Length: 178
Image 1 (cartoon, helix red, strand yellow):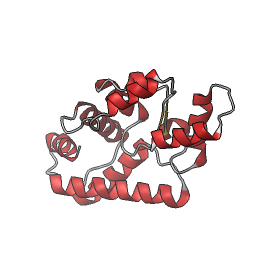
Image 2: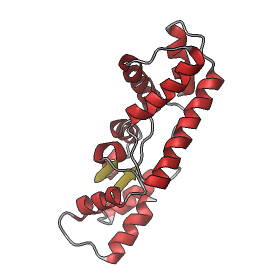
Image 3: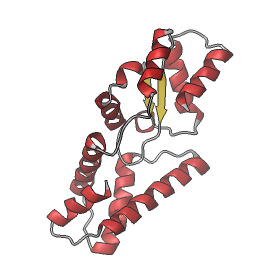
């Protein structure tokens, strides 16, 4: 991601350093995760990209704009979806297939920092995993991030399909989503 963000700004005529972009990217990610843990607040991907842009603005004199935020969201999403450095954990597809064969409904609960839930869905689809997921809950789509109970309650409600889940189902859900 940092490499492609660097290339984006270099093409625009800014002399941006990969190491600085990486440093800022990781700093914003740490800040967002810390805020989520302490206050359970959601900071949407566009806001997080804006924070990254503001750090770069101070360092490189880049004038922040909605266009840059939109472009950076696209650069980051495209990088994630097409990354050659990403692959499923070995055996993940087989494990999910076994759960599906045994009749389990599978949910996914995910925080997002720099890209929207639709990007995560595209990654799942790229690796053939989306077909196993009955319901995905992404923080930017429901307005709450883990560890807020709402994001988990949403997944349980959607997966239960109107049935009252028993304790075994809830424990299994927590394990599968871990």
